[in-house]
Structures are given as C-alpha cells and as structure tokens.
Image 1 (spheres, helix red, strand yellow):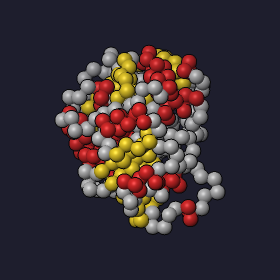
Image 2 (cartoon, rainbow, N blue to C red):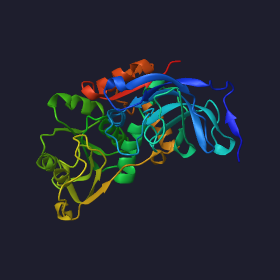
Image 3 (cartoon, rainbow, N blue to C red):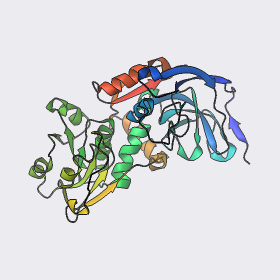
Image 4 (cartoon, rainbow, N blue to C red):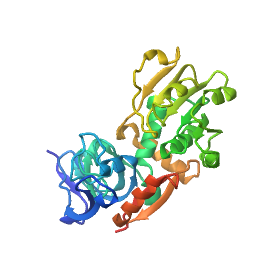
Length: 340
C-alpha cells in the first residue's frame, strides 16, 4: 500500500460545510461544523478554494434527484483548490492546484460545498495558473461538459459549422468559445433578441432567436444544414434540431434546460435519413490535463471568455448564489470563493 503525502500543516479535525439534512427550500442549505473527511486509499483530499453552483445542486436541495442521492448530504458536483493529502504514488503533491467534478461527487458522496472534500484520484485534474480562483472555479463542470460534447460527442473539426441550441446557458456559452477556438463557425440560440449580444461576446457568428422552430432559420444560412448540433434545450425541441443538420451530420443530446429528458412514443423514424444522433454525459476524464491547461492559457491570453455571472465569498453566500441561479436574471456561472 502506498504511503500518503500530506500538506505541511495538518488538516484540522473539523471544518465548515453546507449540509442538506432534508430536502427543502433555500433554508435547507445549513452551514454546520462537521468532521474533516478522512481520505481513503486511492482518494485525494482537497482544500477547496472555489466551487461553481449548478442546477444539479438545486435539484439535490429540493429532493428531486434520483435514488443515488441520500441525506444528509454536502452538495457540490465540482470544485477547485489545492491537494491536502494524496497517495505517494498518485503523482499529486501537497499544495498542487487541482480541479475535480462529477463521478458521484455531491450526490453519492459529499461534495465541494465545504472547506475540504475527498474524491477518487482518477477524477482529479492538476493545473497551474495565476488566474483568480473565481475564474478557475467556474470552469470544471462547465468546460468538461462543453468540451466533451464537442469532441467526444460531435468530433467537431476546424472549418465545420455548429449549432448550439440553448446558447445562453453556461455550457452553451462555453461551447461557443471552445468551438471558435477549434476553428468552427458557430450558430447559437437565445429565446430573447436582447441577449444576442451575449452570444456575440462569446464569439458566436450567427445568433438566432429560438421561437421553437429553427430548421428554417438555419437552412436559410446554411442550405444543406450544419455539420453538428449541440442540444441543450431538451427533447421537446430535439425533432426540430435534427432537421437543422446535414445528411451524415451529428446531433449530440447533452442537456434539457426545458426539463424534458424523454420523448413519449419515440420512433427511430423521427430521425431524418442519414443524420446521426448521440448523447453526452461524461466525467472528469473527458477533460484531460493538457486540454485544461490549453484552455487556461487561452483565457489568460484573452482568446477564451469565461461567462462568470457573479462571485460570492464564503459559505454564508451559498443561499444567495442558488437563489440567483434559480432566478435566471444574471447569465453565466455563479461561483463561491472560500477566502479563509
């Protein structure tokens, strides 16, 4: 068994964490003193410096998640920070900057709404950057989902055309910036003309107002249809999205912002001939360390934009962050930074 390596200062016995004891409203997010998690062999303990706030955690707080989630639970499906303790042969050293996300984090086991979190070593991504924690904290789940959808889901190449349906979501905005960095031409949607500027700021070439049917708009711009489409709105519009894609093009179903994850009485013949339909629901391994490093460098150089809605400071502001996320009034990622 490998020996652990730990930070010079031993972790305290207790820490502050946001705990959901039972499902409910914002009042269900309680700050408590709890034991610092004991690291298991093959896992890494991280001192959390920032974490993104996601719809998944709102769902967990409301008790609307699947049976994987039990209570009490510390939410948080992603986080960034520094290694506190790891196996000696893990390749990770104390104090090293790392990101982590998904893999049951904040759902099957306690997540990042805390001063410390433990996660399996394979879902830890090391990085080095001088970017502030509020920027880095916005990235893990957002960039992993966007990058994985574009590469593993769609195999997007330079010179191709991409439609993003649900473009003003955090994943949609991230996908636009990454797709432009890959060399694609990007069409992206918003339900409000007033938000077209947000899409252009993310690099979108053709903002489109989505009134429920897009195929005609897309084919006015690209008569043969786009090479690839990223579906983030859901199954309610998926048949129309399929009609925006050229023969032998691909649609990747990644999200359901409108809430519909299934199609009643689905028939394979609803898929236009020659169009491919796939899905994406990946994990941390879909965002390799060298890809994250490239993205961090691109952000520092100003080539990639990070859609941060607001940074909150301290666990005391988690309720505010979830409330603002639910209101939808401010586009972009909501990030909580732990300053202590």
